[in-house]
Image (cartoon, rainbow, N blue to C red; front, side, top):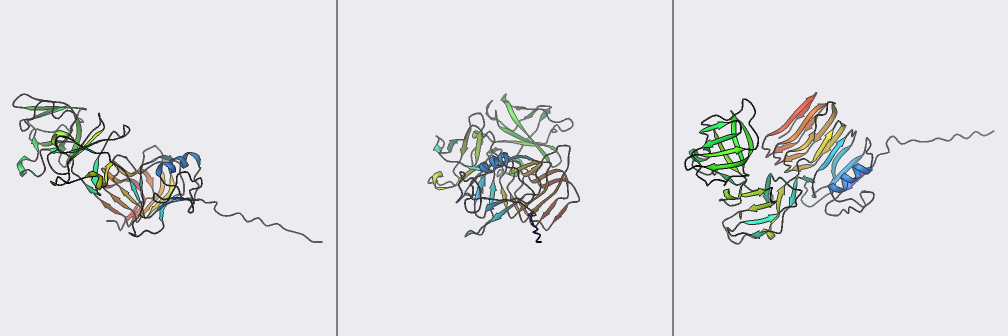
Length: 359
């Protein structure tokens, strides 16, 4: 009598690899595999709605490519790795970019270039010409003599500042951004809702009051920025959210500057990745560039995430921080580069973190 035993081998991981390439991908690809990669972060966002990502899944971005946009809020993800693949001539990591390319420029009567962004972009935090950051328009100018680089506060209150240093006509700075020192090294920003000048004193009424105990004192300093009227240096720019108009001065004094011959980008996306309560995620060999807040954000939610790892990643030119992580246990950040943040490299609330060999 013969006895036949059927053996069923169950694979330990029914994992899926997803591939993205801006240079060779196609968002109509159904599988997003290495043979037929998808192209954009928008396609990845659609995948997150259609697909249940599992522990062991990998999301690969092609080396040398640029992926513009933001991965929308992801909750309860476990065991997924985001990494690079392939070779390119420059041997550069894939870039997750917070920028959009800006074109369709026209020249105004002052010789500056003007274009209109899409209406859904309501905030621009940086402008780059061929990857070089351009200066925000501001007054007083930072290259002024030392004692005239800032306005001195002569009076202040919960929602206003005054100075006798600014003689601009009333209304000049309506809608501008005001940056004021509030405590030692701390600076805050407010939108100017009304600017008046009575012949001696300029007063700026602000969009919201200062926090209690942090009203700037008399004699402290401030300046205003992001207003077309303040553009008076090469490369300065401003963005008017009410009209969606972006204005850029030629980056050099040469009259031959042609925007169509350069890659001009505006930083408009807040984060590259936003997560809520997720476990065992890894990012490796990626570059995050020019997000208007932080590159990767783990939001506060009342529950703790566990075990996120960032290995050999670059965080460049974020307006706030590279990593902003709340309620995390077991964070690893190693062999990463942080450069050009306006606030801090990391803001981490994590138990048992390993942060080492970073630049």
